[in-house]
Image (cartoon, one colour):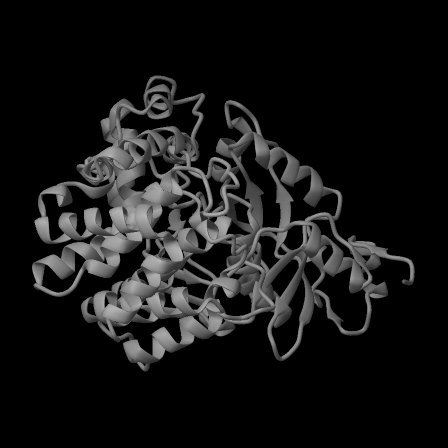
Length: 495
């Protein structure tokens, strides 16, 4: 192999010919956004759309300032700052690979315990959008009310110490307090997480947190700031040894490369109080009806991931494409999505639901994307509550089948015991892993103990059509094993 080219601004002219590099001058960009949560997804998705605009001479005043509030974010800052905040993206597709270097992010703020640098940067006059990818479970939601969990220790701290917040939301509230005092005007808060009505949830989180310390500020935020809903979609695996080796094969030394599928989608409510980039000119969709798009995506893609992820892990299948190559799991996915999820999903414009399921099936089966079942099964306490339970409730309300979704819940309960079918252990994989394991262990003697987790299932333990099916499937998993139980379901429930 030829000598690797370190990823830096001064080396862009040396990149291999097949690698697309920024055509814009980075020193002529000016910031317009702060993004909190600089994981792989943001760099493969929102940052890519902004980069594509810049490639065409647009959005040069909308460069991204990266930020983080977790200790682990400091390591990402160190990696990215060492390469001028550039990222190598590798699109993986059976038709071939494509490589490009993106440069829409121009800085990454210091990660501090009191978030002082983050607060001051959001409060600067040039910032007009604050966007976030903090995961579905990162919004401090009280599942019983849908509002802010005011008893969470981090929220209590931020309410009592509004100038020294721990959370991203506390930092945003503190920055908005400064903007209001300095007469700088509001900003738009743009959630890019997989939550139904993510903008509405972000608004509720910010406003309720502000109200705990400053009701007048809360009223100003609610009246003046915008929180557009959005739907984001692109499968982006975690970066590991394979991904680091892959970028080196391209001749590039990148400490934080990102691989992703070729497909991208971004649907955004056009509600920005302080302006926005023309992301639609890079392929995004602005619409008043985000709900239809996000329901189809969250129920079928995100829900579909939960249908197959834990099952694959239990059977020792390391990747999502491997689960789709498993006859039983693929049949289970097809039957549950078409008979128990799709009937409750309205089609998006130009996309019938059946065609969307076919698209998702092809994307999941892409052998080039080594998206791990462990990543997909992570944070099931949030993802089952948000992606699976709504379909169960719709099925019960409309007197439609829910037996497959009951099986999915039983498989997840079995997964949370922490042991695969071959006897190997599953490492903790949820922020609530200890509580989930206790419930899973209790379910071995009494399956209903799993459904008594009201923060996830609410009152579904009292819905006997669902709870009876769950208990039957759980006992079948214990008696017959995962593969045999899945095969039995598939044979009993033709699509």
